[in-house]
Image 1 (cartoon, one colour):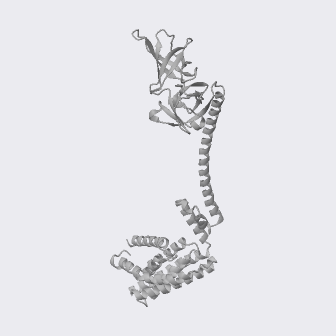
Image 2 (image 1 turned 90 degrees about the vertical axis):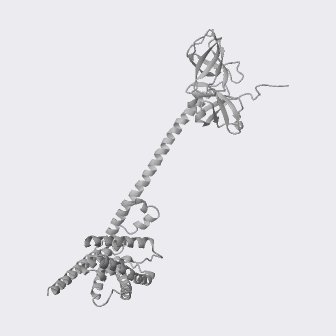
Image 3 (image 1 turned 60 degrees about the horizontal axis):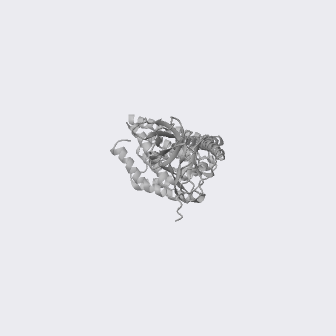
Length: 287
Length: 159
């Protein structure tokens, strides 16, 4: 009797459950819920994984949802695209700023070169070896631009012009410049009113060595040293540097030695001016 | 314990259905794991539990689709109730009745869904290949899916 009653109540519960589920299903069918559910689904998937909705699939995903929801998603996509665009523009703006600064610097250099008493051409440094930065660098002008071997190389920093080195090797479209700081570099320098001559040598470091200074020479700290008129390689009167240290005069030695700080800081140079030479060989051998 | 087991089975079957329909479909046709699972549970479980499984799986399919939200919930609930009534007269523990049952219900489900789509969604996504191939695949799949749920119900007592 009890089991029959239990079976009967089980049947009733089943009928109630069926009725409830069918009613809910019918309500969902009659109520325009499809668009709401699909909008929620699209929004949910968009929040979880927005890139899924990009590209050609976006239109497919948005085809059945209300306009306001699709506008929301499209606005977000537009926002992301524009944010990326703004980022690119900021980079371009920074690059434009550096170009403007470089342009201003080049204009100043160009104006300065018009006051030079030498003819020549500007060249840009295209290669520097970090482990050999006081020895040489390459410039973007070569034989095709009229550059000749042993041409004097100068540079300007602000209004100051000074010696940088000489052209050491010439190729068609680029050249190698040996710097005044190179260990193998030497030149005759003059200082003072009497244009006392001395030997300037590179040390492979920032400071140059000045030797063979006569003991009685009128030398002092910060005195400026120029290229000599007796120099075979360099035109007269180009600033080499300033005396930074004088080593004590030893009476056993017949010459004084001094340190020279170059006029042009080699590490900061970006462009150089190549002074045109006559093109004649340095040592004529008419035989 | 059984309630947690039921939820676990519900989630696993839903995920497997989603994986099959997204990754293992050939010409847009894939074995309908959810359909055969719903019928298996309608045969094996008590009516209230089976109805709940079928209703929520139907709702899940409705969420996955975009037309006539609630249609599959209605169809699966009716289908479950029909199986529940007819299992007193037929022995669905055997493969042949299962195959026939699923084949017939696949066709009826498809037709009923088309009817509901026409009425409530104003579209008729009739696809003939689905009409002819889907019932056959589902019918052949049925004994295997039933065996799995039979094992879960009778041997491992999860359901």
